[in-house]
Image 1 (cartoon, rainbow, N blue to C red):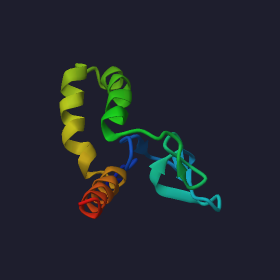
Image 2: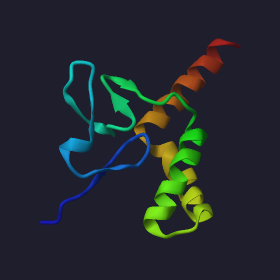
Image 3: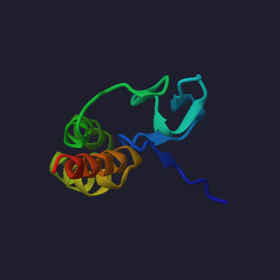
Image 4: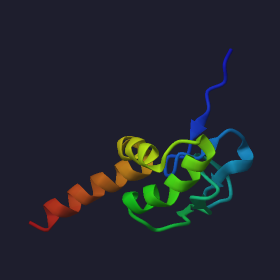
Length: 100
């Protein structure tokens, strides 16, 4: 049986072992986010989705050997589907409706 790799729902970092899992506020391992993005129940970097994409693209391009433009195009499609950015999108819509 083939093992499926999970990915951080903020930056797409591979969550291939518990050592790279982020932590909840009570110190438990969080299976949704990596140690780079989520520590003690809070995001380590407050940024927009586009800022996160811009931050991650060079690392992934170097690792994969792909051009940055190709990686960025892919990330622009994938990131809006990740848990962190989906939640932000919902909150943004709610706040927009409340301000009308």
